[in-house]
Structure formats: C-alpha cells, structure tokens
Length: 244
Image 1 (spheres, rainbow, N blue to C red):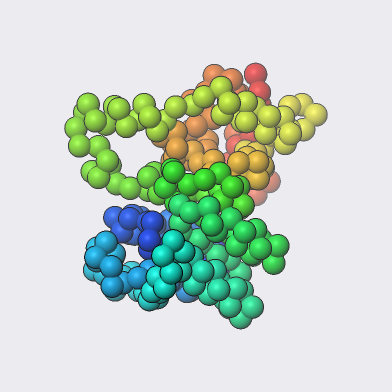
Image 2 (cartoon, helix red, strand yellow):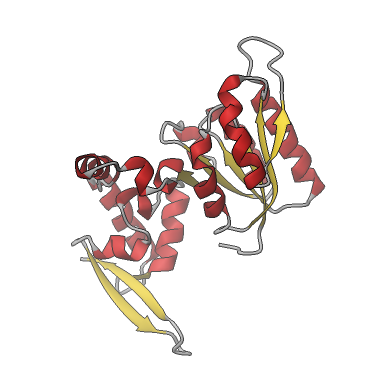
C-alpha cells in the first residue's frame, strides 16, 4: 500500500449506518491520508439524525442533497458529480467510496481508468459488481468492535461460525494464487500472493475468517507449508508459502 496516498472519502449517508464511522475512518488511514471527507444525504430526514453527532468528531463535511424526484436517488448523483470534480482537480490520487449500492460500480470503474486507486467499503449486502470494480473492498461488519456484535458466549460462537467459514472455494483461491506466484520450486513470496488474491477477489480479507493478517490464516490451513527467510540486510524476515 502507498502510505502517502491522498484519499478522497465519499460516503453515501443514505445506506451506511453511522455506528461504523470510527472504525471506518481508522481503517482508511491504513491506505493513505484522507484529505477530503464528505457525506451525502438529505439531512432534513429523521433517519440521518444519528450521523450529526459523529460528523464533527471525524471532521466529515455533510453535503445536503434534496430528493427532488420520487424514486430517484439524488444522493448518488451528487456523489458521482463530486467525485468527477475531485478527479479533475488532481488533488488526490485515491478514492474511498463508502456505500452498499451497486449504482457506484461505473464510478469506481471510471476512477480506476483514470489511474486512481479505489477502495470500497460497504456492508455484506453489497452487490458483487461494485465490489469487483474496486481495487480493494472492505466489509464494514469486520471493522466493528467485539462489544457491538458479540453480546455473550452463545452469540459470539454463532457470529464466528457465520463470519469465519473457510470454504473449499476459498482454499482453491489460495492454492491457485500460490501456484500462480510460485518459483520453479513451488515457493511463493506471501506478499506477492496477497497482492494477486486481491486482484482476483477485491473483497478478500483475512479478517473475514477471524485472522488479523494473511500469515496466520495460511498457517492455520494444513494445505500449505510456510517458511521464513532472512533478507540480505537481516532486518526483516520474508514469509514464503508452498502448496503441499
């Protein structure tokens, strides 16, 4: 990830719950500096009232957009127009589009065509076309604190069973990515494997399966062999992975 990336964060206030805001903004800083932060919605509507308290705390600028026509999403249009204005201003080199709405699929595609890096954030209900149009897509549910989602032991176990299911399809994705990145001996640098996985499946995230990083995820699976190697300067260990 490019740490000095300047990111425009554009939030669709109509379909993103305010409870995710703190974790969401913290997550964005992992990929760059959010220099523009805007949220779009009709602030005269009662259902957006929960946002008002968190906007000042996170220095997010609310953009008022009235719904002029029934059945049309004016918020989406305003957000798309702003995104294009920001693109041509050349003030940023990345975007974070926060929405669970497939209407932003074309926008994400257009921004990437202009050599912008595009991060998407939304709930698990987000349609796949928008997900794959982004360089990386992060589910908001995995950012929420344990206290919010896990009230007791019984609830916690049910949550993990639902969230952390590593299916044969996931295993196949990992195995194929290792093969595609491997040298003649079958060993692949884990950093290259992770980058390739994201290109194939932008919503892949080790946290979806209960692991904070990719390394412990691979270590937990019997289908893979892991190896640490010293760098030439000896400062860091490089992690390599191989299919068994």
